[in-house]
Image 1 (cartoon, one colour):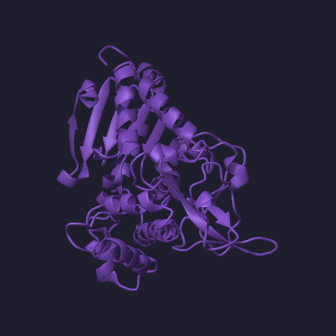
Image 2 (cartoon, one colour):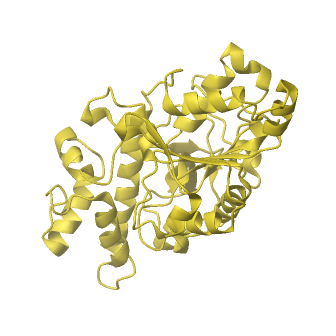
Length: 358
C-alpha cells in the first residue's frame, strides 16, 4: 500500500472485513496422512467404506430398507452416494405406505453420518501446519482483528473450533485477544442458555459467559455438537423434521458417536442437529439456523476479502450456490478473492467475483 506508514496500514486492515468459506476439503487437508478408513467421509464411497469397516451401527437398517424396496445395494458403485441415498429415503418419509420404515432408515442414516464424522475427526489434532490454522494466523499478522473475520462453513465437524482453540493457546497470537468466544461464536440466539454440562472428566472448550467477541463461525448446515433431545430413541417424524424443536450445545471437544443426555429425572435420547444432504434443504433448516444464512450473505456482501478454502460448490447444493451468487452479485467487489484447493497441493488462485454468478 505504497506511501502508507505501518500504523496507517494496520488501521486500514482493521477497517476491512474478511470472510473465509470453509468446505470439506479443509478437513480432508488435515487428514491427508490418514488411511482411507480414518478420513472423514465423502459423498462418493460412503457406503462401501461402511461395508469395509463393518460393525457399523445403523448401516444394516439403511441397507435392508433399500434392498427390500428398491433392490439396491448402497455399496455398489452405481448407487454409492450419500447424497443420492439420503434423497431416496427422504422422499419416502411422507409416503402412506413406506413412511414408517423410511423414517427409521432416515434416522439411521443421520446417526450413521454423525458417527462417521465423529469417529474420523475426533482423533485429528490441529497443528500449526494445518491449512486453516495457517490462513487465520497469516491474516491476524496482516492486521485483521478477530471481530472482522467471519468463517462460513457447510461442514458439521468441529475442526474449526479446535483450530481457533489451538491459536488461542499459541503464545504469539495471545496478543490478539479472544479468538473464539464459545458458544457465542456461532451467533445463535440464546446460545449460552443452550449449553449442557458434561462430566468434569470430559475435555471441553472454554466457555465465555460474557461474550468477548472474536471470530464468528457460521455453521449453515448445523454441527456435531448441536443436538435435539427426545424421550424415545424412535423419534417421530414431526420431531425429526421440526424446524422449531429445542436443541442443546455441548462444549465437548471430543464428540461422542452416540450422544445421550441425563436430565434430573430421566435419560434423554438425542439426534444431531445437522442439515442432511438432500435437495430443497430450506424445507428442513432449523429456525435458529436461518438467521445465520442472512448474516453470512451480508458478511460476504460487505467483505473486503473472501477466501474459499476446500469448498467445491457442488451443483446439487442449490441453497449454498445461490447464496454465493447473490452475495457476489450485490457485493462491493472485494479487493481480493482467493480460492484454495487443498486437493492440488494447496494451490491458490484468484478468480473474479463475477465468475461465481455465471
